[in-house]
Length: 595
DNA sequence: GCCGTTTTCGGCCCGACTGTTTTCAGTCG
Image (cartoon, rainbow, N blue to C red):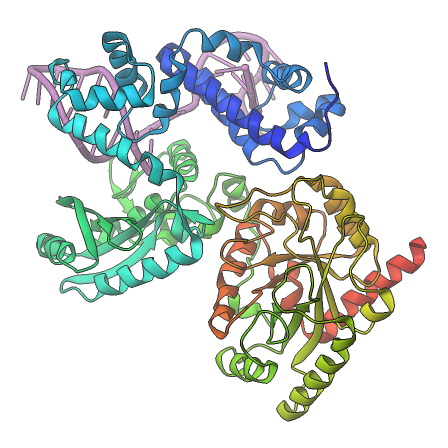
């Protein structure tokens, strides 16, 4: 019986969530008698996976654990059991009843519990690889209910299994999606086309690109044919009726297209945007109100009369709900808020008045400050400032300044601002938080900058709560840059006690950044929400390394929107004068608390 | 197993599609 180390915190949430998901899979395998247990454990797993605060801290406060969605007496006991012993007895018991090697297949397209069970029992198949061999052997075809096409489906599911785990990053998906969309809109007969699915919700990673195409029925076949013949199509999976599904040459990305009539466009858009959880909750909501909601529209449940479906706005209105922006459609309380007309008015890209993180030729950008400034002023006329945040040389090996060089950079910035006739370029720095929480620039130098953002660039495998807290306590640090350190698809977030850190950021008036680099998007949406709920200000920076990267602001804003941010939550929707007030506010707190 | 403006029991996650059948089980979003 060991104590829980700090390092174990965040990984507990994920491992425990995975274990609860496995328990759900076991029950799913065991049959429909257990379907409600499946729902319960799935819900609990989802809660754990989305939890930003280490689960162990809930346990310390006893009753708190059961306030979490989907966790009541039994699962709470099992969670405590896990934290004490690393095991859950229920899971140990279930493991003896199911073929463990096949459980992962439960999440593979084409496989369900019944199919897996049948094959396991008849052919003694126990692993994914044995399943593959069985599928190729042709022995399944003699089974009842196993036709050629079903078997082909399962083979494809298995083949795509790996690709399911390598999803597209949002930025790449946006670019691929808009290319495809452009081509579709140009096809004869296409009245309108729009991205839906997880891409429309701006999720940070995207499995496949979903598009809805509005067209008269008589053009569907022609549209389908013409699209499938386009040069970027690698392979056609389905094409016929109202569905087109293809793999693109580029990245082997799957694109799913649905053709719809004009009167059902809104309903289809709504349900194909999802999330699945939001759609189900919305259908249930409709049901309670005496409506039937499906992809063709909203109907009177009693008479079957069609009531709405042309656009999403009228559907939400009919259901008595405020319009819910796609980014919020995750069944995380947005429907209840929409019913009370209390949804936040989300921040928009147009609200942004400056970029809080920009690199120049002094570190890892090819471009000179003046070129950057003139480019940004031309392309983003609404911007009032950009903050140059180069770092010191040394730790990263690539460029950077010596401490004494900043005086030269300041002179260059002054010159550029003079030439522009506006204080457009702000003097910032990206300072590194060292192992002991101190910074790699002295306070008397830091005081000369207009904006100081602090990053961790080493010691990824440690608990970094202490270092980040110490940075917050420095009155000269205005912002924490990429606070979680994760690199999407490459490196997990380091361990941080987010509850503690967010409380510290709030009490010290320290801002937290959304770094909009495509593989970072750090802070991520859920932590952004946790932070603003405690009153922490968020700022968004692109970390631009070339002139094109200023466009990344759009995905940075998307993360903020997924984190329920209004304009007021985002510091760089303010004028620089207001940013100065924010900095003074921190100074005054630090003086009063005597830190 | 969870949950409650139907609250300590009796509900919960729906409708469409696919592939297989010939009336429906299994899977998907």
